[in-house]
Image (cartoon, rainbow, N blue to C red; front, side, top):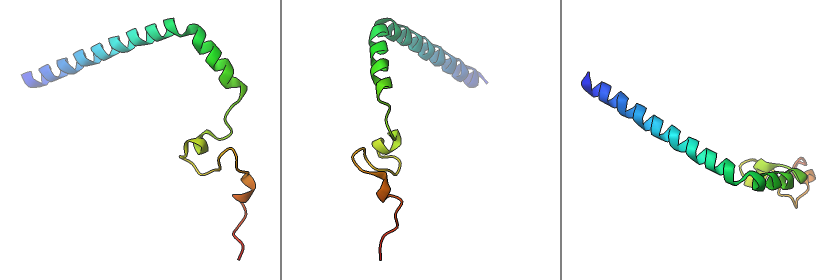
Length: 77
């Protein structure tokens, strides 16, 4: 029973340390990048990606240079 109590206490301490570290890092990043994030968001909103999953290569689809008409046509015999 004592091992379980020590284990649970250790997990709680690790959780609190990680939570505190995440709060500190989050606060510092918001403090530094306030104006930089606003300019980056305005540049990104000007040109949304056509198909982000296809650009990453995780979904079927063409690149931005290819036309989508060749994907739907069956092969000629």
